[in-house]
Image (cartoon, rainbow, N blue to C red):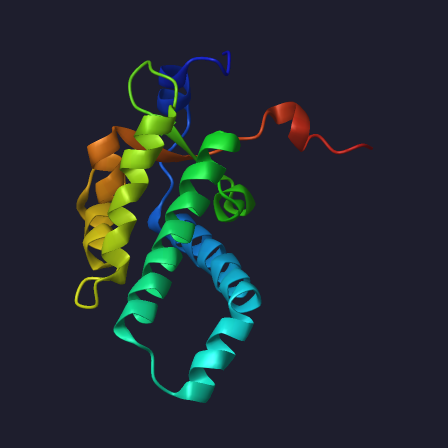
Length: 163
């Protein structure tokens, strides 16, 4: 089997289950949190000292955070061929359904629905329900983009230990 065909990948690799996806999600968001704390440390100290955010400053901060989160997922999945650091560590990656290669547009569509994570009554609930009830454990973004998250299987030659 060659690694060039997306349909071969999709049919050969099993779906990534909810546990692997949840741990990858946690790892990626932990990386983002540490990044935000490092980058915005002085910014937050300044506003905590003043105690009050102006509505413009708060809106700007939320917009910047959403853009960084979107860029993190889209760019990592595009440059790392369907993986983010969390997905890489959990041995999972994203592929396009059918015979098409994963493209930037699909990754953008797939990740745009992450904006709902910032809406207080929803957070990740719609995606969690979608992963649980869908046949291939798909998030809403996967359904719209025609992608699926799968488990990377190592070749048997990688499993052979030296005697």
